[in-house]
Length: 113
Length: 113
Image (cartoon, rainbow over all chains, first blue to last red; front, side):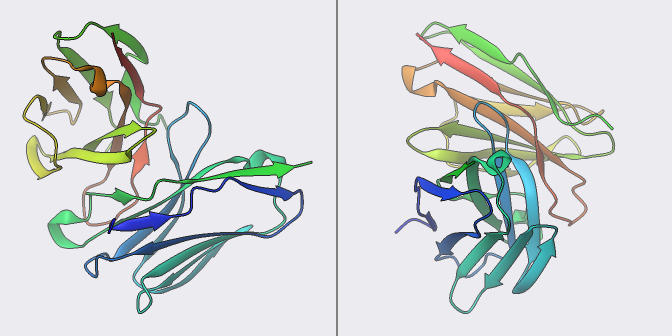
């Protein structure tokens, strides 16, 4: 079983839709949870960063972490064509290992005008 | 504020050669990490340096090595290149003080022929 599982998609939605992206994980030591956006042939861009369980909102983006279920989500409201990219979830432990990120494989999202 | 800078952006090497990639972190960041991204394996952690010391290491063979200089700049080296080393190599930087906001550069595209 992989430590982090993420549906690769592809996911195609119309402009303005609410997008839900998810990851599950198996390592109980993970404490930090992140979402990155990666455009084609570019480096990953940090979107959201959450410590432990709970919700975090930033503009059109909401990140949720449910540690009891080992499940994290990213919601994108009012999706735009510019949101078309690969979305990567990433997580790490605490202490000395909090800079060692374990990534999901990424979900390819296309928002159609 | 300048982001994470990686050089060179693109390079082609022959099997058996070695390669050195360079990374300049965001000003003030003392933690530098390296990742390999391939279509099959996704993003995989190579190693992390903080204050010139390797603090974390991933599961890669000894052909992959790195170092960090006193100004936090980092290099990674791959010796005896194999075709399977063709990948996007990403450098990431962070303050390294326990916060987990980790920022990536645009990457170095390595093709081994």
